[in-house]
Length: 358
Image 1: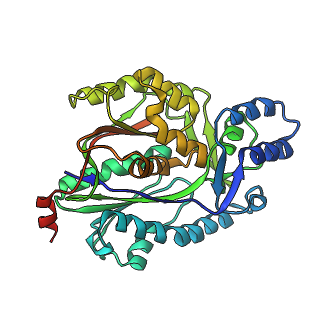
Image 2 (image 1 turned 45 degrees about the vertical axis):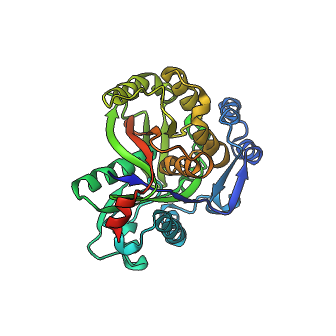
Image 3 (image 1 turned 135 degrees about the vertical axis):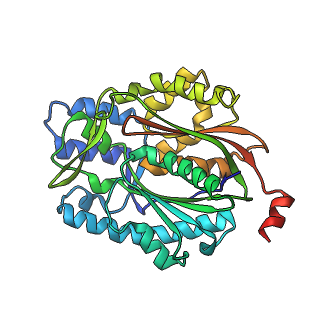
């Protein structure tokens, strides 16, 4: 059974605190009638700090889409190799053992995908399959885990590398002052993450079942408007309320696997914002503390888009290692409105699996 091994995560060296975010918002958007509400919403996110790929002075300027995408290419190539190498080490595999690379990002665009550069640069086999995912936003972290699961099931014994590079700060639009834009300016952060899904062996979450769900007629609730100045993030005010219709979907998904979604041992949930986590706890009838790894990610990094589920999973490995056979849920949410869900069981490499790998 495919197994998600311990992720590796890295955040850029530049840090902006909540206090600094509020100060910049007041300075840049001062006098706008919607600013007081935006400031209140930003304070309520609970995000203490975020990491960004450039100093804040550069982040607040807009050099144009061409330059921003150049920065994305330079920074993604600069920051992904170390994270990839750590993820391979965590999974006890080498680049030569990887059969497919899933690359997820919604904050920059490269063609060929960064997968080609990774293969050429880090010693992956030339026959490595490339699976770039660019348009699932925050849900792409969960989707990557699910597509890795599917690949390993279709190709027994294969290993899949997942790489997420989200440089959300490169999408900042100085002239956008609607509530959704201002809130996102105080919520999103930058990070790079990677993890290996092994077809056999390893220590981690044994993936048993996955599914996707699209809430009908919500495709314009989270979207990009692509303009001359780049990606303009659009967030409908109804988005925070999406956990009410999604909770029954998660409940039925677990029930189909003979599990009770309200009685699992661990939960790796996309930290889109505080209301998402609070509402999901309410509608699943669980204590909000079961989402502690997601809360910690939100507090210390903000919403890092597709990298959230990998960062929350890393915390599970490091801070709260489950007992063998512990059951858990992974869920990512994003544009569509899309939910990507997986059920897994904590497991470790058995002597029989170790023999197969020799």
